[in-house]
Length: 286
View 1 (cartoon, helix red, strand yellow):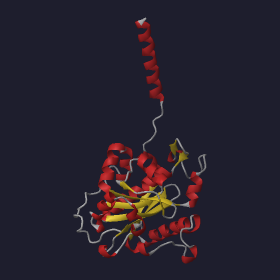
View 2 (cartoon, helix red, strand yellow):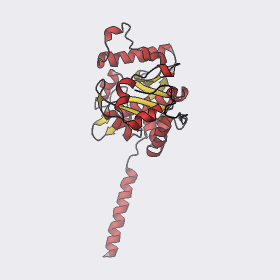
View 3 (spheres, helix red, strand yellow):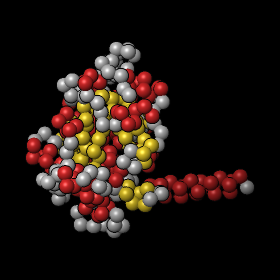
View 4 (tube, helix red, strand yellow):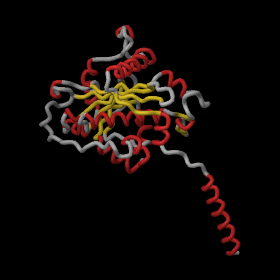
């Protein structure tokens, strides 16, 4: 009887091994993203104008947070852009810009400038978060802002079948929401954010994001140190703050495939910040 059990178990294990060997191995996140998209920093005025046009479509037409009549040239921009840097995600096959993001920095006079989310949001966060923000030099903080994905590309992503210009591997299979490519685009935007941060000496990020976006990013290892309560700020949003180096190191341990994409296989790694003691910062947050 034991021999029969052994034979049955052995067959089961062999059968399981055969099934495992025949299971298709999916490409990792970095491979999928880089086969479909590319990251570009907007360093020329021509590329910056491309960012502004994409933002106009998203923030003035698709989701009218801003009045389109204020931008006769169909380029959405504001006073914060003078001290911001910008990144783009391009679709390799078409060359089209499909997403954009900016980093708003403190500028030449850190003690005399604010961040877009500072006054309306920071005071809603807990004391630990506020203390963490206050402890960092303002010239090392940047706000992740104006994350935008083109309407045309989002329309194509909503189609279940493979469509011209978007390959099937660009979709992430989400058990709750079916096929989605947005996670890859969001992660690509963080690759741009990281590159811009390193180039400009930024060690900490603040942002206001939709709760669902924060949850999705967390599943991919992009987890902020401090997240505030849900509040009304251009819709339901949560304020968030994090140290870039801590986030990236945590990602390396939890999701090395995502780490590979965002850091370009370790080419871009943020430095640890130079901290100041509480009360020594040039300006306290709200």
